[in-house]
Amino acid sequence: MQGSFSRPAAGLLLALGLSGVALAHEPDKTPPHQAWSFEGPLGQYDQPSLQRGFLVFQRVCSTCHGMRNLTYNDLAGIGLTRQQIEETAKAKPQPGTPDAMGQPTTRPGLPDDHLNSPFPSDAAAAAMMGGVAPPDQSRLAMTHPGGPDWLYAFLTGYRMPPPADAPMVPGKFYNDWVAGHMIGMPPPLMNGMIQYPDGTPATVEQQARDMTTFLVWASDPHRNDRHSIGKAVMIYLAALLALAIAWKRKIWKRLKTQ
Image (cartoon, rainbow, N blue to C red; front, side):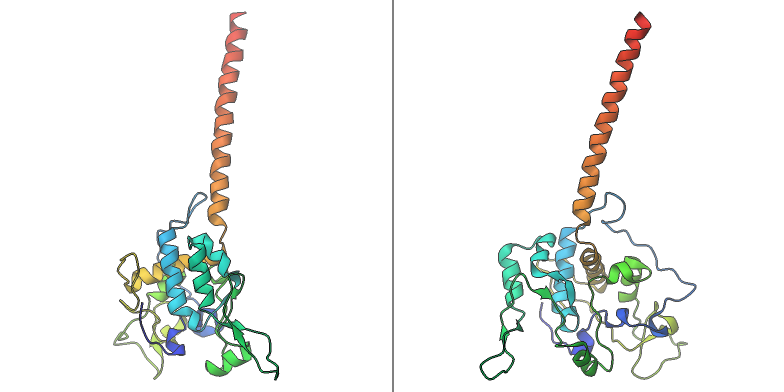
């Protein structure tokens, strides 16, 4: 899980929140559909994938991005223990109360703290990131056109080197899934850039899949509970239907014998 990244390079998905032509969909392209465990009315999040995706966010994306709609306590939803949550929160210093001289201070993070941006303000973020503040990632998977399929396609869509016939501009990178195929953000994922504790090979494709799964969970963290309730209701209704049919047959059988 080691690595050294500059803020611009580590800003996973910085470009995804930017508006304008550079990140519009290619008008005649639809990203290939991927098989996701959370799809469908009974779909469930893959918890190991969620935990790996959070690791990618923690080690790469959180250098520039926040998820302010989530608190560290919410990470219990991806299977983190209380101790893991407390340790994760503690590792992220938070603004404290000013000292006696009125100077800003920091304090260890707490489980109730939000996963805020690492920058003190949007203006400071924009000043450090070339004029545009890195967007919050809390609702990205829900609000971005194309949803998880496009997020995965974008993360795996860099081409190094670019196609020979692609007109390129110095300082830009080729990506199959942005209009014009040029983007200023370097490829955020590399094979083996982190090590997964469960031994899963950290290929670009695997990191992209795990990160996409985590982004979808962040935008809809209660989907598993909702689908579990829906499944229980369907089983209950099916049982009632079976009882009703059996009761109807019994009644009609009595009537026919009279």
